[in-house]
Length: 389
Image 1: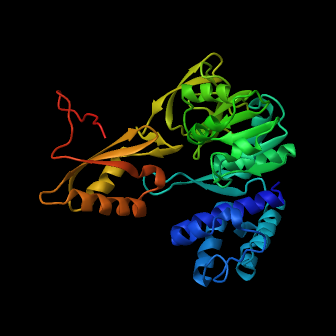
Image 2 (image 1 turned 45 degrees about the vertical axis):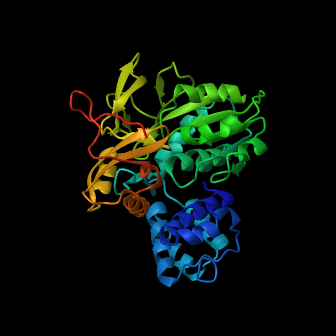
Image 3 (image 1 turned 180 degrees about the horizontal axis):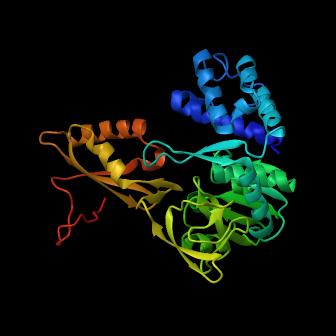
C-alpha cells in the first residue's frame, strides 16, 4: 500500500513542518533533503526534546490514525528516522479500508482545517486517475509537491505505488532541478505556481514527458508554457483538500470531466454522500461535464493556497498603530496598503508588521509589498480601488 521510500518521504515532510514551526532557524540549517535513515529525532539530532517528540508523534497520529495499529508507541521508544518510516509502512500494510487520513488545508484563511478521507476513497480515486486522467502510462513520477498534502499523497504516493513506478522527489529543490532530471516517460506533479518557475528553464526541445497540475486554476499561460517547454501534455485536476479530486481536463478549452468514481448530480456524490464544493459549477451534457464559475467564499489563490484577503487585512489592523489596511493580489503574491495612525513612523511600522505577519500567517498569506498613505485608495464611486505599489 505504502512503500518504504514513500513512508520515509511522508515522515520527513511531517517532521520538517513541525521543525519549521518550532525552530525556523534550525529548519533552515537542516533541510530535510539532508536527512537519512540514521537521522535522530531527538536533542542530539534534529533538536526535538522529549516533550516535542510527543507533539511530533501526536501530529503523525492525527494525520495517519496511527492509534489503529499502535505503532506510535514504538516511535517514542525509537527516535530514528528510518525506524519511523518502517513503522509507518507497517501501519499501512495492515490498514483497514476505512482508515481515516487527515489532510490540512493551507491555513491561509485562518486556522488550518482538517479534512478526513477514508483510505478506500483515496485508493478509489487513484484507480480513476490511472484509468482516466493520464494520457499514457508513465515510466516515472517526478514530485514537485510534498507528499503529506492530499494532492501529493494521491499522485506521488498512492498512484506510483499502484502503478509500480519509481518516484523522484524534487519538492523543495531549486527551479533548475527539473531541467537536470527530466527524461522521457516522466509524469511531473506540480502546481501552477511551481510550474511557473521551473518550465521557463526547460530547453523547449520535445520530450515525451507529461505534467499534472492542481491546487489552483491553471491559467492560459500555463498551458502555453507547457507547450513551449516541450512537454507532451498537461492534465489539470479540479479538487480541494476537503473534497479530494472531482474532475480532470486536458485542454483549457474543454470542460472538466467528473471522475468516474463519483456519482453525477448537483452537487455530485461520493459513495452516496454529497460533496461540499467550494466553487459554483455549471453542468452540461450527461451531467458529467462541468465548468468552474467562481468561489463561494471569495478568497483568492496565492501559490496554490486559498487566501482570505479580509482575514489578512484584519491581521494587519490588529497592530495598534494601523488605522486601516487593504489587501490585494499583485501578480503571484499579495500587496497591502496601510493607513498608519497619527505620529506612526512608516519604516518602523513596516518592519514590525512584517515580523508579525511572519509569525501569524502562512507564507502565501503574507503581503510582500507594503504601501503607506493618509487614506485608502478609492475610485470616483467611493469603492476601494487598486493602487500602484
